Image (cartoon, rainbow, N blue to C red):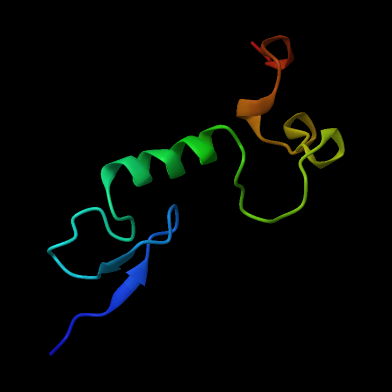
Length: 75
């Protein structure tokens, strides 16, 4: 049985999807690190709504005692 081949997401080189390719789906450690760097530099992102000030949770109004200010506790 022949192993499937896939294209490296970074360079497009075809590699065998098997134990013989330790960096799969990448062809090499170099391509893996290039991809990681793109994520860290925010050149890649998972699609979704943009975060903004309006989307932040207001934990102080949630009733969560852990979110209250220290001065609000009854002693």
